[in-house]
Amino acid sequence: MTFNDETKQAAAALLEACRRRNLKLATAESCTGGLIAGLLTAVPGSSSVVERGFVTYTNEAKWEMLDVPVELFAGVGAVSKQVAKAMAEGAVGRSHAQVAVAVTGVAGPGGGTKKKPVGLVHIAAARSGAATRHKRYVFKGDRDAVRAKTVSAAIALLMDVVEA
Image (cartoon, rainbow, N blue to C red; front, side, top):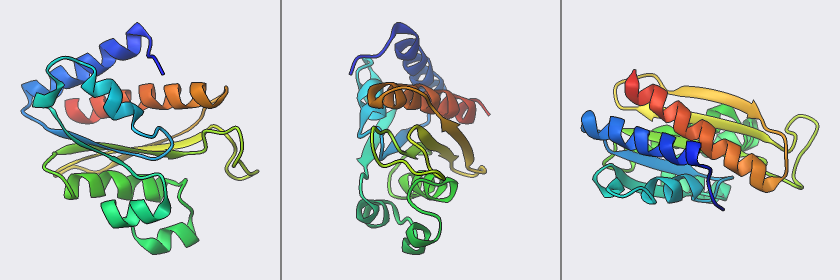
């Protein structure tokens, strides 16, 4: 997947904001499958900020790698505010990063339900010593469009958390 210039510029600005504040960041990705980390590491000099990326596509990966409580999957499901927040907090806890973003959603074309339609994405951003932020979206478009919009929204939420 290629990203538009606006998304690439937002990623570069995020990395610079982290660099100025001496912050390392991590990603915890499900529906984007590593696209956020891929975008960030495409920026020259990103190694001074990007600490690591977790691709946790399955529930097992989420609880094994990020300490997402197992009971959340039965209670609210993997595509939920609670799981997104636990993923972001787990990424901070399981890394040397001070900030992290997490995404979980239904990119499609299948897998959607009435309660959780295709395009539903939960994004959370955690920062050491601060409250974890969350945003819920229902993006329109095909799988690539949902994933691209998710990446852009994740970069924007991370920037808000870094600049707070």
